[in-house]
Image 1: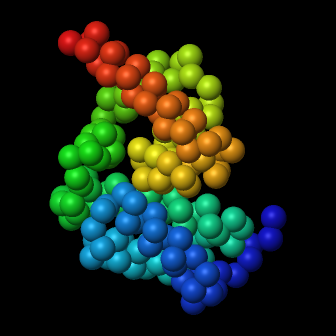
Image 2 (image 1 turned 60 degrees about the vertical axis):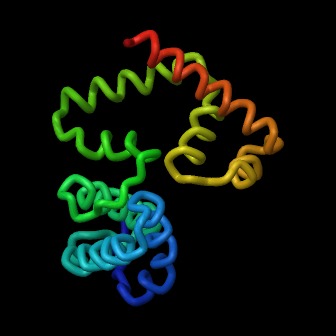
Length: 164
């Protein structure tokens, strides 16, 4: 593989908006999102010689996600809304055993679901896509997406009640 030279200014211009959207979607706070975006590019500058210029959007998306989760863990972002407690809980699970249990629970919840349901749930509940945006991406009607997610949400609520 070629170790392509990384042009930080070009990356910032081309991928900065994507990184900022990702930071906003996780942090839910404009100031924190801008801070995180800047931190992503500082990390890129700091590690420029170690990074290959292959698949930059995936690399920056991953760095942005990790940076935002680290900000939540460290308390530098306090803007997690009550609806986002699952994200905050996942972010705070540093213990490998806890992450494994959480992963097992998520696998159990999605065990009998279509992979498209998992994709829709991720897009809507984690990435905060609207029903309209999700429907365009998965090729279902808005009412179909709404119904599938409502049914899924009822299943999760049932499993939660069974656990108690």
